[in-house]
Image 1 (cartoon, rainbow, N blue to C red):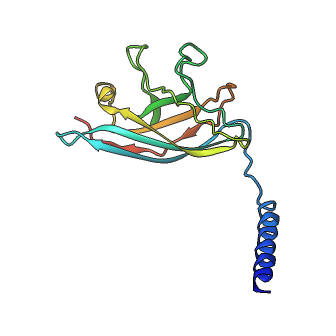
Image 2 (cartoon, rainbow, N blue to C red; image 1 turned 120 degrees about the vertical axis):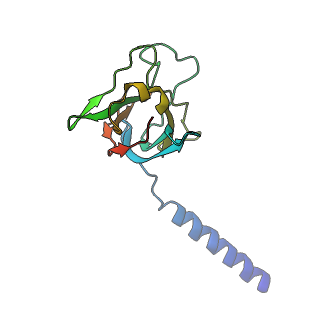
Length: 170
């Protein structure tokens, strides 16, 4: 009798869990990536200057096609993380234009596509910004960034502007 009762209880629990798992909805996001600013931190040099910035954004993407393959090296797939580095000049934000156009602050996000049927993804992306390269071009200690990303289908995310940051420079 006890053995039969245990089997019935186990069977009832399995049916209940199967029914409940069907009620859990998969999270769905738009096919275009959506980003938002998360945080910005700095690392100081031995001379106590802000030499490295770490910018973090959060993202969602409905088809999980964020990221570039190693073989993606030419436009429009050279970069997928686009960043404007700006500084406060006369009360207005102005983009810092680097004298060497082969160097910039754009970056590459590696493949983030999840395995499995559900390709919806969300997470955080952090990028290291070598602030010391910009020191000679900075006439202000107040900076900000504009960021957007593109997925492999070339869908562009929204553009996010960070708050203003005061950095310590030489």
